[in-house]
Image (tube, rainbow, N blue to C red):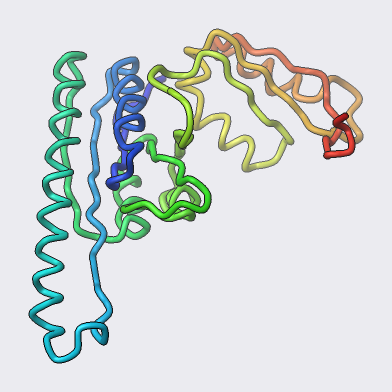
Length: 231
């Protein structure tokens, strides 16, 4: 079991390079076709701010913006091509002048998994919104890997924690992640504050994963943690 096609979204964020490196590493491990989708968010200045010269000024501002975005897109494309050529990864480059919350979920439907960056809370960045990861999950029907805005993530995960509550959603998430789980060095299945269980919570799904070749084990059920538990 593997990922045949991986889509990575690049929207002009300072973290695009980190997101791209993770996606390329994942594609290299799975021998996947990598689609790099660079979105250019449409730019609409406020008309009233420019008075009678609004049309000509706005047109000039939009052209400057497009030129700047296309130059930035060319730089990250060159980086993507270097990464993929060095690792013998099939790369497909796409540029879309659309709002990412519209186009990324749509194009993710034709991939096995999407890789997107996590927007930093309270920080506005081009080409992303705080809701983008959730919108891709809900709008595409495909699994999504969110690369955190802090830290280095240049290799696929080797130690994986599965949060398990026995629901349909948890079952879908586990099976969507199977290509990653099978390659992990260790998979821990954790149930938070389990109720009414006569055996180790998560034992059944851990056994199911083990039959797929995963190095899985069920961790003891943990109580709900709140701030009062900390010194």
